[in-house]
Length: 371
Ligand SMILES: Cc1cc2nc3c(=O)[nH]c(=O)nc-3n(C[C@H](O)[C@H](O)[C@H](O)COP(=O)(O)OP(=O)(O)OC[C@H]3O[C@@H](n4cnc5c(N)ncnc54)[C@H](O)[C@@H]3O)c2cc1C
Image 1: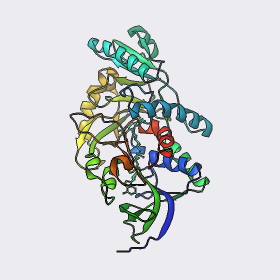
Image 2: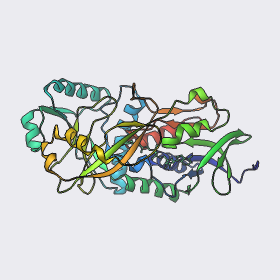
Image 3: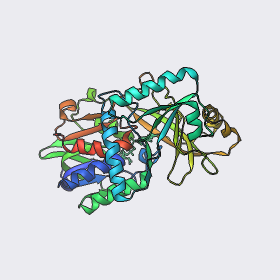
Image 4: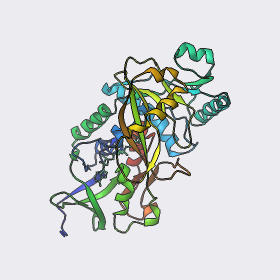
């Protein structure tokens, strides 16, 4: 094994998903010298391109949580950024619908939870108002969230990468991080590329998504009990052919730890249903087509016409969770040496939804941390 490093830099960011890209961009724009390492041969091939592409309003997350804070701040930053850079996006609004009468009281809870998080524009609407807005949706009532929207996540990541590289940042694909250790002058990162490269950096940001806990554990000297167990929860998406009958995103009242099979629209107006949830042991994006009937039943609760439509498999995404099925809604976990004991290292763990919405806010937050 080599002992001398091959090159040195100021900051290494591990993982070129939307969070790693946003953090690398922010630090590079602030004048740091950043290398962004990605194991795949391109950026954004994992969770950041396998999600609902929704700009969330900030409704569901516990008051005072990092998810609530970064979702609400991130939403505003993201709309401004998307407008400025002409990234395809649309603030189309979302309806949370009560498919059973006893869910109506939950709608009021959403309005209150959102208000506490600083989101003041949610409004209760009646069954007849809902019929006017979405004639094909059946429910007892709804809440409308006007600030919810959709964004082209690939265009967003491409723009973040463009900013990063234009500012002098260095993106290196096909560079899987194997491990790291503290040495004089910083943290030495060992790649498992053909050359077994060694890179020395003063600061390392671990934004490795589904692998972030494993990458953290691979850093010699880290307090292992500070790194949570990782869990994976897969979600499937189906598409519906034909023109969209929906003008808004349609969500049922949320289930235990996830938002329920909802209707999203992509920037081309294609209707997608999903995601469902299943806990899995390894990262495997295989699509289980046998779920179709259950999917149709879930959507038919608020959109009965789905039973006569053509519904086809689309893709899966895997939630990078740090809490299991019994308590599935852990907060984002952003750690510095104070928690894990390795000077110079920042871990971004459990960056599940609303991570896409939050990316610019998380980046600004991470950039001012003292690792
Ligand atoms: C089904 C689903 C739906 C979602 N819907 C939404 C939504 O509508 N709105 C929203 O705001 N959020 C949503 N999210 C959450 C959002 O997609 C994530 O929070 C976000 O994409 C996480 O980005 P990331 O950069 O942390 O992770 P990733 O995109 O997974 O990026 C991590 C990167 O690290 C790389 N990597 C891993 N290990 C290594 C290594 N050892 N060396 C080098 N590179 C490595 C990976 O290849 C990957 O490119 C959803 C998530 C899922 C799963």
